[in-house]
Length: 217
Image (cartoon, rainbow, N blue to C red; front, top):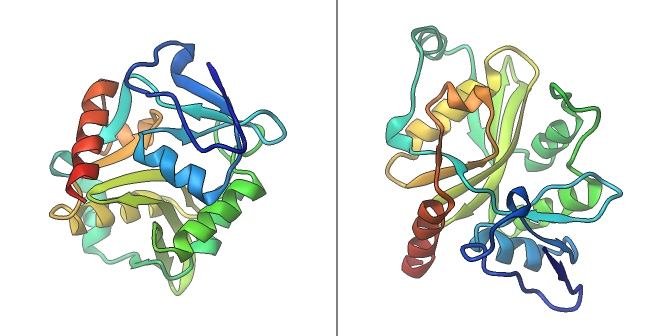
């Protein structure tokens, strides 16, 4: 693993770096510039607050190809009944705050520190991060956020206060962006996203798509 210098924004080449279960570097800071640069390389921060910042590029990578989205009959019925309504970038801060506070199976706390949250809020203000909100009876009941890099969407975290809210929001987002998004980076495996069609692909395949996307921008 490479220790990052706080005074220099750089990362080791994730395509060449192997080992440590996907951790390519540690240290550095959570500045907006470093985070944006990292995501363009296929690297993301994931660590426990109070501990050293860890920077990841796992192999394989968990992704979803929009054309491969799977929608169960029960979810299609829910969507057809218009149980939820959806919006984009209507309340980014509230979405990320709910993601920070959401309880998750097998986790005693949150990985989303206040410092990291504020950096993503700034990225949103610069037009680089977006939120998807899910509403029910004018109440925010679910949503997720991530970074948009050309036609690659890097999903970060989601929350749901009622059953199927985040799943409905994700499906609506994918179906609405099939022409605009080539791949959705889900980062780490969850059964929730696997049920929607997300799958593991080799790191090199993901990085190739990301690099080609960067060259077209």
